[in-house]
Image (cartoon, rainbow, N blue to C red; front, side, top):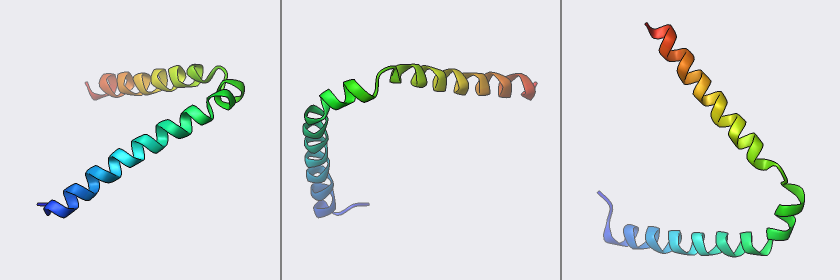
Length: 62
C-alpha cells in the first residue's frame, strides 16, 4: 500500500512533529496558565453536549 520510503518519511515526520509540539508547549506553559484558566469547563460542557446529542438520537430512533 505504501512504499518503504513513504513509511520512513511519515515516521520521521511524526517524531519531529511530536518533539516540536512538546518543545513549543513547554516554552509557552506560563502563557497558557495565564490566559487559559478554566479551559476545562468548556471541555466538560462540550462532552456533555455530545452526550446529550447521543441520548436524543438514541431515544428518537425507537
